[in-house]
Structure formats: structure tokens, C-alpha cells
Image (cartoon, rainbow, N blue to C red; front, side, top):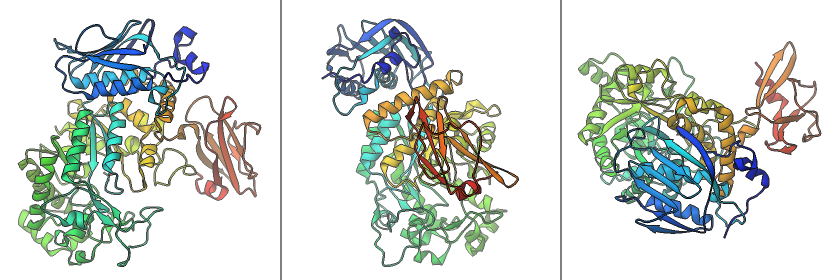
Length: 631
Ligand code: ACM
């Protein structure tokens, strides 16, 4: 059945034949080159799809067939002959597009996608489907949609080989089906690396057959909801009924599923810090005798982040660097992990190690003397080097968070730069491979809008800031920058819908930063495309954040007076406010300048409209909160 084309307006936006060229094409990430041709391709009811010679990957064909069947078209797959959609692997390599690029030619007659590899064909298919109206994503049949796309020629290939998302499955557990859904969604935006955070203080999520307690004990904790990090301590009689882990069979299934979508999975086994789940399972791994009383963290405070000169731990969540048992443990873990994940890198963590328990440990003191280690950073470096040897002994390369630079690293270690870009710049200059993942641009666990509309997190990353992400700063050695990655830490993410909400649309912005040439990036155009993809997500029933419609709220204090300054993140919005407890609408005075908080007011309400329709969320902020924000 054909689907409804919702309004003439969408049509006018989509097709230049109706006199408007704006946003007729809304491909994310932006292709390297798009040249519009003459005429329109209309999808016939019966489509012949010509499969490429020598292609073993059926996923691309299944993907196109599934999507076009949403458009009511029946797809017949043939090996040769005249086709409506032709997929072809180049006999002679097209050197411009490399191993992941493609060319896409749309004429009124047919569609041809060419690539050097099946990966390129998969990405070409993603672009093709994005060229159709948003209803192509609908889970339910719609009618009267014009399944047309403008004639064009696209040449496209990635800027970086590493286009990553990190999903933390330790803080909150996500099922195999949810991880697969995440892979599906990311690969549609041409992401090709999924970094799975498999271990942390709050859970151990991978079966290790030679260490069964890791999942018998380490995968389970007391269930709590609210503001993670502030919870009360779990009591001995509270059931440990929250958690889960992936069996070997499930990991193999996820890896295969990802591979079919051209996504490589990098497992992270974090050490020496963030290891409480392992220590709760095997207390001998810590340098503290007390560890036998430890539990998997359920969200209670375990680190004092405001301690100086360095944060300190209330309980010892570190593997002991001076105990051979730890290296035997890591060897067992990495043996199984290396067998399960074919990807070349294993991430060894290394972030946020606390030193206060090591400082008190006679074993660590002895180790320092024996090895001539001058400080705790060097102790961590000793651990890191031994961890790397284990990883390399299984035929893999090690990557770690940027703290591992501090005590010195081997030339073969790769770095993930998260505390800004400086560590990544430094590492690239000294010849280490780097993935840029700075908090300022890629931490998608941060709030993306005002705290009045978001699940509270300690920091904010708005969409425009994510869009500014440039994985290769001027000072870096570009030869060693593998690419970039956004990280979804899940302390405050209790379910998969929220994981989607936090990932999109910032995932669109990062995708464009790691795929598209810097010269094609354009914020206004990106916003229009993002709104087109919001419609796609509405049809696909994928959750996303509409925070771009809610203004940025700043408060300035002048003398004894407070002024609220509202800055829209995107163009074309009208903002209405009230201080009288009523809900403003577009008949209220329009915001035009910073607003004085009236003397006895209690609440401010704020809403955005576009074309006289509400588009933002009703934001309600107490005057007390506003005053606390004053600069
Ligand atoms: C990190 O965010 N602790 C790597």
C-alpha cells in the first residue's frame, strides 16, 4: 500500500519542481559531493534490484527490500539484467572513494550504487533510503506518499576510519536486542565502531568461563532509581536483582550482527580503577583486606571527587598492581575476550584511578622499591604496561583512556582522549594512534537542554557544541588521529528509550564530524536536516531529544537585580514567558530582551513557538533556581 504524503508543504520542501530547493535532500552525514540533475525518479510498484557480482553480504539487499516494502513496492532481486536499483562492485577500483565510499547515481530511469566494497554499497544504500520521504521509516502503512527522489549524482567517502559510539552497558544493562537496535541505528549514520563498556564498579557484563564469579556475583546489584551517585548504601538484606551479562554465545551473536552492518566492536575491560564489580567477585584482586566485604556498587557515592590534590576513593575499587594474582586474572579474562571479539583493539580503561588505597598498601610500596617507581602515576604505568603485554600476547592492540599517558606509555599503546583534546594532540605528536573523544563535544551522557527539561547530569552538551567537534585540531599530527567517538555513559540512563533520547540528535552531529569533509559542514543546513530526521524517527518510533527548540537560559545579576537571558539554539523561534505561574502561549508578550525577575515572583515559565504553533517544551524554573544560576 502506498503511504500518505502528509502535507503539500513537505512536498514543496522536498522537491525543487515545486519551486523550492530548501532541504530537498537531507542526508546525514553530509556526503562529500552532491550534484543535482534533471528530473525525478519515481519508485515503481515493482522493483528489480540487481545484486552485485561477488557480494556475500545480503544485509544491504535485505535493508533496501525492507525499506522499499514500507513504500509498498515489491522488490525482486536478480543477478543481472535491467534493474530499477542496481548495486555494483567496481571491477576497477575507484581510488577516490576508498574502502568505505560509494557513488550513487539517480536518474529518472534508475538508481545505481557503485562501490569498491560491500561496505561502500551498504553506506550507499543508507544514503538512498534517506533520499526518500520520511515515511519510508514508518512501521505502519501510510498512503498517497509520492515515493520520488530528485535526480542526482553523489560521490561520498569518510573523513575518518574511526567513527565511534561508546555504549556503557555496565552502569545500566542493555539486552542483546537493545544492543542490536543501537547497532542498527548507528550504522544508518555510517558509524563503524561500537565501544562496549563491559566492566565497571556497577557491573561485570561478560561471561568469563574460567572466572564464573564475575557473572554470578559481579553482574548483580541492588536495584535503585533516582539520582544515580547519591543513593543510600545497599543493605545486606536487600536483594541483588538488577543486572545481567552476555554469554559467549550472545557476544558472538552481537559481533556477527554488527559485522553484517559493518560495525566493529571494541570491548573495554577497565583497570586498574573502576573495578569494584570484579573485586566484589574476587576480593583478592584489591590491595585492601576489607575488600571481602565489598558489594557491586548500586549507585552510592564511592569516590570523593572534590578531594585535592586528587580525588580519593571511600572504598578500594582498584586492582592491585603489586599482586601477581591480578595479572593471572587479567590473562584469563583477556584470553576469552580476545577469542570473542575479532576487532584489533581491546580497550583497557585506565581512567580515574584513585591512589589513596595504593598509598597505604605495603605491597605497593614494595613494588615501587623493586621497580624504581617514583610515584603513583608510574605505578599505574607499570600496571598498564603489564596489561598491554597480556593484550598483545593474545594478538591484540591496547587502547586506553588518556590518563595512561601520565606515567609513560609504550610506543604501541593507542589513546582515547577524553579530558579535552590536549592529551590526544600530545599523543599524536609522539606517534601514538588517537581517537578523539573530548567531553566538551562528544559526551552524550551530558544534558542536551536546560536542566528543567532533562534528567539531571552534572554538565551540559548542546547540539551546536557537538556539531563543532573537530577530531583533528591544528596542533595534532593528523597521521595519528584515527577519528572520533561519542560516549554514552549510562549512570543516569535507566532504559533504552532514554539511551536513544540521549544519543539523537547529537549522534547526527558527531556522525557529520567524523564522516563529512569539514568544508561541507553548515549548522543551518544541519538543523534543517535534523528536523527532517526527527520526522523519520517519529515514523520509526525512535526517541530523540527536541532540546534544540528550548532556549538556553542564562541569568545575570546587576546590582540587586536579576535578568534572565534566553538564547535560542536555532533560528526562527518565538519565545514566550511568564512569571505569574500561568502557562504562556503565543498571545503573551514575545521575548525580545533579558527579563527582569519581578520582586516576589516564584516561577518562570518559558515556551518556544514556530509559525504560531508550540514547538518547544514548557520549561518551568523556580526563581530560586534562576538566582542560583546568576553570573
Ligand atoms: C571517562 O569518562 N571517565 C573516560
